Length: 373
Ligand SMILES: *[C@@H]1O[C@H](CO)[C@@H](O)[C@H](O)[C@H]1NC(C)=O
Ligand SMILES: *[C@@H]1O[C@H](CO)[C@@H](O)[C@H](O)[C@H]1NC(C)=O
Ligand SMILES: *[C@@H]1O[C@H](CO)[C@@H](O)[C@H](O)[C@H]1NC(C)=O
Ligand SMILES: *[C@@H]1O[C@H](CO)[C@@H](O)[C@H](O)[C@H]1NC(C)=O
Ligand SMILES: *[C@@H]1O[C@H](CO)[C@@H](O)[C@H](O)[C@H]1NC(C)=O
Ligand SMILES: *[C@@H]1O[C@H](CO)[C@@H](O)[C@H](O)[C@H]1NC(C)=O
Ligand SMILES: *[C@@H]1O[C@H](CO)[C@@H](O)[C@H](O)[C@H]1NC(C)=O
Image (cartoon, rainbow, N blue to C red; front, side, top):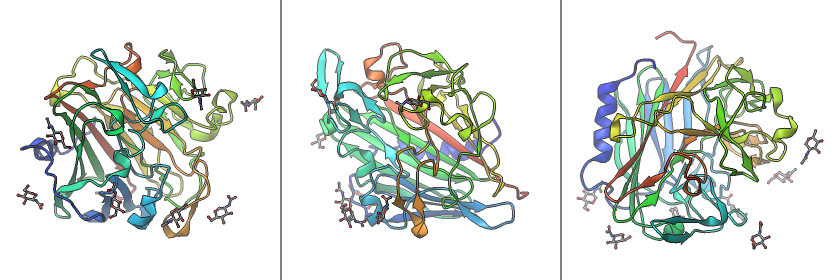
């Protein structure tokens, strides 16, 4: 992994686990900006969502590579999870139920008979509090917190959750997700659901961008629910081990149940043996090669075992920033996370967090810009 600001990373990690965890203060729902020279980022505490990420293209012009809306009001109506921090458990749970320590838990059925993204009022749709906010200077960052209650969406136990967004040097964005189980064991699986388009949020589809995914296995699914198998990507349209255009096999019959990519990968670099607390190793999940128009590239690293790759197949006719209308394949979401429905598959890495334990996912986005620094 390339170098990044370790001392600073440690500082913000310390911030987000300190004290009694999340204070319950209400914060005004608005859009907060972080700025580091010509690199800037906006987020809202509604759903702890990423709103924009702006950086220079190869001509020096500033480009926003995050899809979304201009105002909080527009986000309140969103059903496609633009920029959202998703939890308590991202993705689907089959039949909206699971058994833990002998107790059967029934969750919100908000996707057919399944539960998705934490239920009817998941973390993507609640108002988080602003715990810390440093808008500029060398280390701009913001920490959002949320106290999730016992029974929310059907999940057991109180859970204190934070997400920290920080801008680091050389066009890096760090995202740290933490969740402390306060009184009961519970599954926890958090993810960011941001749609990216490195050609600019209003530049059309992502089908000609080249992507490389560091996973030689994936979790085959039936109607979006993993079968439990962990199968090789070799010989399937899911194989992105070598860089390849997103659109090159998007019409493969194997993908037409989902109309494009919507699948979880088992990341090769996941270090199952280093599960202890903050010592988890980060591994490279995906590289998006430099976009032809802007020259902007992106690398994502994570401590999570999986990544859902979603090509915005069902984003249809949605009016976003500047009146631009988003259509299928307008962006890609690289949702690093635990495996979907893990709570019903003992062979998947466990997502259970016991009382007093802290779930963590570290993510690092490294943007490649043509500019020399
Ligand atoms: C949040 O509430 C605590 C008391 O619970 C108070 O001490 C603190 O100053 C508040 N913080 C903010 C940012 O309002
Ligand atoms: C939100 O959706 C409702 C119903 O679809 C619509 O009436 C309303 O105008 C929308 N609000 C915004 C801000 O788009
Ligand atoms: C949900 O489950 C019920 C009972 O098993 C079944 O009749 C129904 O068709 C299912 N609905 C969907 C959308 O799968
Ligand atoms: C979040 O805040 C918005 C804007 O103030 C408000 O309309 C909405 O009802 C709040 N949501 C919840 C779940 O409290
Ligand atoms: C759980 O949260 C509720 C409020 O949401 C609070 O009343 C209760 O004291 C909390 N219990 C624990 C053990 O944190
Ligand atoms: C998927 O695409 C193939 C080839 O284009 C076609 O034969 C098949 O009927 C399609 N299946 C569905 C479910 O649309
Ligand atoms: C797209 O959305 C606009 C505005 O909401 C609406 O007028 C138009 O009919 C929609 N087009 C399609 C093809 O759904």
